[in-house]
Amino acid sequence: MAAIELDRISKRFADGTVAIDDLSLTAADGEFLILVGPSGCGKSTALRSVAGLETIDGGEIRIGGEVVNDVAPPDRDIAMVFQSYALYPHLTVERNMAFPLRMRKVAAAEANRRVADAAALLGIEALLQRKPGQLSGGQRQRVAMGRAIVRQPRAFLMDEPLSNLDAKLRVQMRAELVNLHRRLGVTTLYVTHDQVEAMTLGDRVAVLNGGIVQQVDSPHRLYRR
Ligand code: ADP
Ligand code: ADP
Image (cartoon, rainbow, N blue to C red; front, side, top):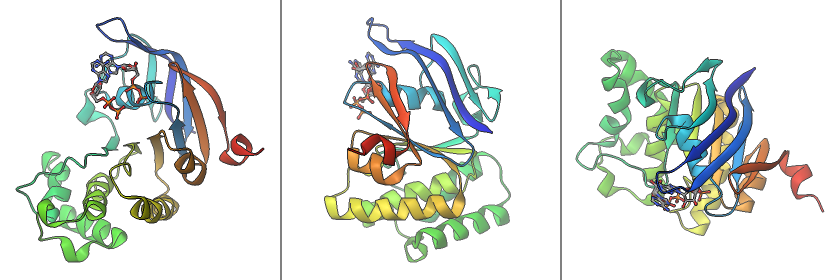
């Protein structure tokens, strides 16, 4: 089944920039799909459109078969992870992770259970009472992932989540992401300009250029020479 469908979408900004031009792309249920391409090719805009952070001018976006063009971002069944963790500095890790659940009025016991489960999965149990300022970059990114996981969304949308980390940590986090995806099996759309990430993380890779999809294939077939 298709978890996320971008059906001939277009996006033109107020200044006339055409960021996306009749782009179609489908992520199957459970798939880890990479959007790769040079800076400015429209990757972020495509992802932000799925999240509802950009309004598209044409086409249709479907999440779990439901057309979401007019659905507000918080009501879309997705969780987004950014490169700039966007954690609340004055809240503990535990509260940061629970925040989306409180917003959605999930019962405290259930919220605590989900936070504990996600913390165990990510190996950050010992950090739950710290504030973001007391964490390393890698730890912050794990907390940001944790906050996405606790929502149990239909899909994760990740926009260059590892690009603020140093090279060594990036390699480690790549492996953790692959592991996490294996264990959770949640459909993931992952934006990167990094060919190595595209090659190592995805089930399939969509190569964007100039606001369209140039090619979609398995990393193996795409990068074989
Ligand atoms: P990528 O994520 O691949 O780097 P983006 O989706 O951020 O690309 O941008 C696609 C194109 O749209 C670029 O030409 C970019 O400059 C332009 N763009 C992005 N956001 C805006 C905006 N808010 N207003 C005008 N142009 C924008
Ligand atoms: P990314 O790292 O995702 O490519 P950018 O640094 O290009 O992000 O853009 C950061 C923000 O600036 C985004 O909200 C994007 O929409 C906006 N932006 C990007 N390009 C332009 C542009 N040409 N005009 C106005 N806003 C832009």
